[in-house]
Amino acid sequence: MIEQDKNDKAATRVRTIRDLANTPFKRAMLVVQIASYVLIVGSPLIGGAIGRSLGLKASHTGGVILGVFIAGEVLFYGSLAFLGKEVVLILRDKMKHWFKRKNSSKE
Image 1 (cartoon, helix red, strand yellow):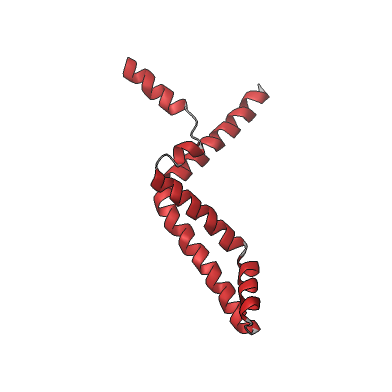
Image 2: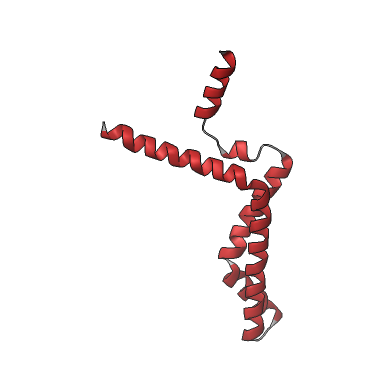
């Protein structure tokens, strides 16, 4: 009976970012994932700034932009390999919470 209560509490508990980054390694992977978002979205600005500071031609600057974008993708998928399940569980819990609110407001 007590074990069933623990399982029920675990099933109804909402996961947070603290649950995702509960060890130093996972915190580091979360930082890497955030850095990958910055690199992916900011690749034109970052690559353009690097190309301008080095005095590169436009075609070479395009290559730098592509390199920054690819580096962001590699970091993203690398960190997702370690955080993937937890990220999916957090998103699933959030979506369940959103749908429960909508269903309960209709009644």
